[in-house]
Amino acid sequence: DQQVKQNSPSLSVQEGRISILNCDYTNSMFDYFLWYKKYPAEGPTFLISISSIKDKNEDGRFTVFLNKSAKHLSLHIVPSQPGDSAVYFCAASRRTGNTGKLIFGQGTTLQVKP
Amino acid sequence: EAGVAQSPRYKIIEKRQSVAFWCNPISGHATLYWYQQILGQGPKLLIQFQNNGVVDDSQLPKDRFSAERLKGVDSTLKIQPAKLEDSAVYLCASSLRNPGDEQFFGPGTRLTVL
Image 1 (cartoon, rainbow over the protein chains, first blue to last red):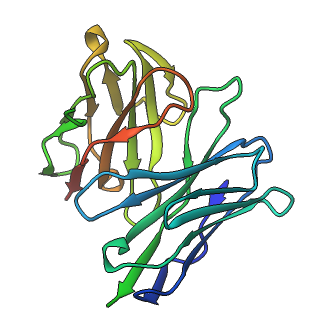
Image 2 (image 1 turned 180 degrees about the vertical axis):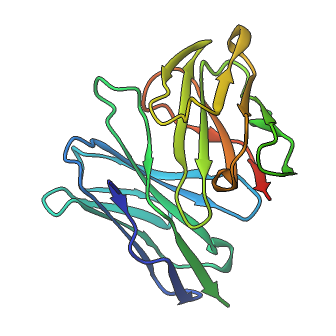
């Protein structure tokens, strides 16, 4: 049972353009969502998060949008840079009354071409 | 600040052999996680410790996997005996204390079972 899904295994964009990575979830009890970035041979690193009480969170070039009714979130990177090329994982958790366990999607490989 | 340390970085064994992985979390982090990441999938939580107590081991195959966190600091994850399907990257992560605190990941151990 895949509770968090990233349906696009890969995405290729030109440097300077917008990258949009998508994520869908099925469990309505999730109240906290995160994006992690992973380079080869390294562990995932935290990028940005959003609580279910918000619909948007912005941090520099990175913005996460949450649509609770559609159980969908997206990560926008503007402008995209070659150094953004990595695997991006969406994750979800129930922070309230829970262990904080993260459920990860399968990941999307982003390639930003110079 | 030193990050999460893991060793070894790579391990190749034959099926039915045993293997152990070691993790040293960030100093002062009470919560420690072990994840399994199979190629093409997102990390899946195997076990979560709070200090030296187990919080969640619902997805740990207990017939062959075991983990311990003596003295609430570093941790070992053992597989005995290994199966072909155990080939994966084993990631260790730590967080400060509370559910929802940011998880910091180590570089992982890539296990290949032949």
